[in-house]
Amino acid sequence: MEQIYTQIRQYIDENRQPMLNLWRDLVNTESGTTQIDGVNAVCSILRREMENAGIHTRVRAIQNSGDMLIGEWNPGSSKAPLLLIGHMDTVFKEGAAKENPFRVDENGMAHGPGVLDMKAGLVMALYTVKALDSVDWKERPIKFIFASDEENLHMRSDAKEIFAEEAAGALAAFNFETGYMDNRFVVGRKGGGPVSIRIHGRASHSGIAPEKGRSAVLEAAHKIVEIESQNDIMRGRLMNCGMVDGGIGENTIPDSCEVRIGIRFPNAEVRDEIFEILHRATNHNSVPDTTAELDLSRVMQCMDTTDGVMALFHHLQRTAHDCGFGEIGCFQVGGLSDSGITVACGVPTVCGMGVRGEGNHTPDEYAEVESLFQRSVLAACAAYTLNDDFAKAAE
Image 1 (cartoon, rainbow, N blue to C red):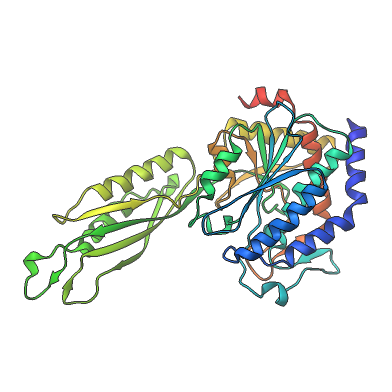
Image 2: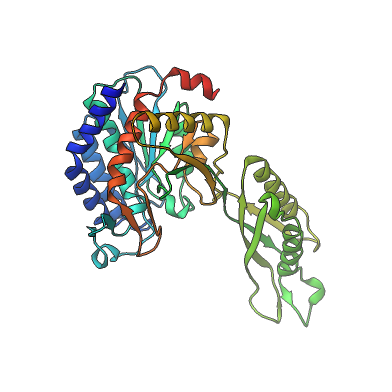
């Protein structure tokens, strides 16, 4: 095995410049979530690179977003695939790449919009497979799923459903999201996102015919008190009724109101508790003749720290030791990612496989260039040694 690890490392070393060139091209191609043409341009670059590497590609059209890119390598194998996942969009506005283009400073840190989150990870996923191909590894299929609107949590699209459909049945997944400077990898993430309750009442003049009105705003107030009274900070059951929109003026009893709520949960059990609280508050009314609807469509799944997730991390940990990467750790974080989708599908996932760096979502975002190569070697070596023994341990 040591010889294989050496060959993988040699391949990555020989391709440092092409990897940097692709990283530069992706960063300088703006792809803010709402810049659909830009996201599709990144998709086209990656699709070209994949096809040149012998990876079959296809795209899935996504509502109100750029295309999702699917890559399939060694599809003839009957075994369950390993997933390499990530996203092509960034949080930055148009013009960010012109103001802050890709560059590497004298300390070996790369800069530019999305340089860390997560253009580097896309390069690493591609070169993971190219490194495996260089040592003639064909143990199982590898499937890429690159989303186009992760940064807005797929709020306005059907990407979550399509992502889950593509991920179903996989053996395991590596998510090339931002890596951490202390070499801890992510084995758990909170779930959550925005939800809303829209309340319907009956409008009436507040002075001439108040008895005819049914205040949607008053009903919203009852629901807010009911919901927020059931927060449990110690258990991570969080519901913040952060925005209320209703009414047209002081002289009119309002016939509509929307309460927008931010929720967070550490695991599926607490998620189900929150959903029950929200459903109960929606279906119960204190103001007679009011009705309400609950919208949970934009909630992102939590990444549960399952036995399968930990089995995959321990496999990665052993590989890191054996291939010379060094000691690694794991932890749980609050930020959301598509790892929640894969784990909810029953696919063990390790997240934070991407390049090391800091400053996500800011103009000061930077990434450590050397880690691009080191972690690509680790990912390829971990994929190479992922076998049926892992599958048994993950069950």
